[in-house]
Amino acid sequence: MNPEQFQAMLAEKGIVLSEKQMGQYELYYETLVEWNEKMNLTAITAKEDVYLKHFYDSVSAAFYYDFNEKPIDICDVGAGAGFPSIPIKIAFPNVKVTIVDSLNKRITFLEHLAKVLKLENTQFIHDRAETFGKNKAHREQYDLVMARAVARLTVLSELCLPLAAVGGTFIAMKGGQAEDEIQSGKKAVTLLGGNLVAVHSFKLPVEESERNILIIQKEKKSPKQYPRKPGTPNKTPIE
Image 1: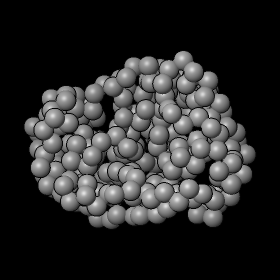
Image 2: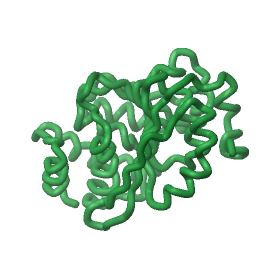
Image 3: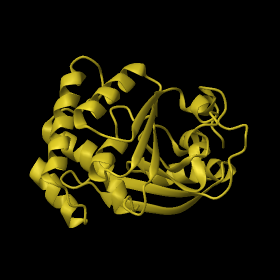
């Protein structure tokens, strides 16, 4: 997917990008590739792959969630090189973005990226999601919590739902085979105050690979004991 196709395909979905925004995506790509030579940010570096598998794939959340409705406060858990929240921020400049990541060098990259792209209302926090979810300044404070390809739903629910405000939303962006995760993750979602309200399946253009976007509403507060200590959700998921 070249930049022109990226712009045209998003326009078909009602997401119209200006030349300034297209310039930001281009600068994002250049900065990502440049920094990737010094640190491992992504295995995907070919331009057409980055536009398809990182940029388009990230913005696809907006096909099923209205980022224009109000100034939305997003927390992106384990975003790595900024996916999905930075491509979303470029497309919808009014959103506020907080990224939490456990690797400090990725935070350094994101801080540099935000300066280069001149992004406002972004903050990048070096922390484990488990301890971040216990932080009163952030716990149950976000309209929207997102995670893309971070962990299975049982684990993700424990890391993400405690950060979503009651009445807010948790979006888990998944590849194919989401059904198994949904079944095994039901208990964790419910226990942490969530309700899976929609599963949107679609094919990524060009390569036709399956994607699933899970929309989970936060209906009640998460129990205080969650998230558990760092590493515990992965070792002993809620089942």
